[in-house]
Image (cartoon, rainbow, N blue to C red):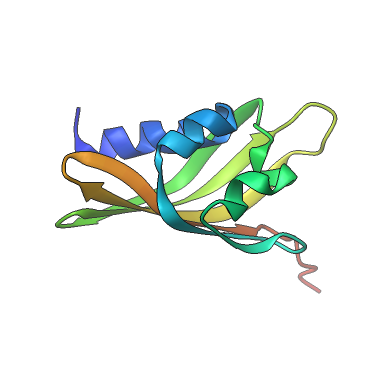
Length: 120
């Protein structure tokens, strides 16, 4: 499997598997940036935030971009995600991964919600 395929597979797991699974794929000092009211989380704060720990039932990635420079892999994409009883969540996201001695670890994740604007 290519590095790109590996990272996309990991990214999907972050969205749909439980927090314990995500924790094993995340660097200890990782930084996550979420929309208000959550904001910037680092390290163990990530796993204490209730909204982060919730998993999504389905996710779909579009507008995918991938770049790799040495031991850093970056994904950028648009996500459409669904949870039971909630409206579909649409956001632009980026995730950065570090290959640390052959093991990819997520070191940064950021989400910007897609908002509809009135063209008038």
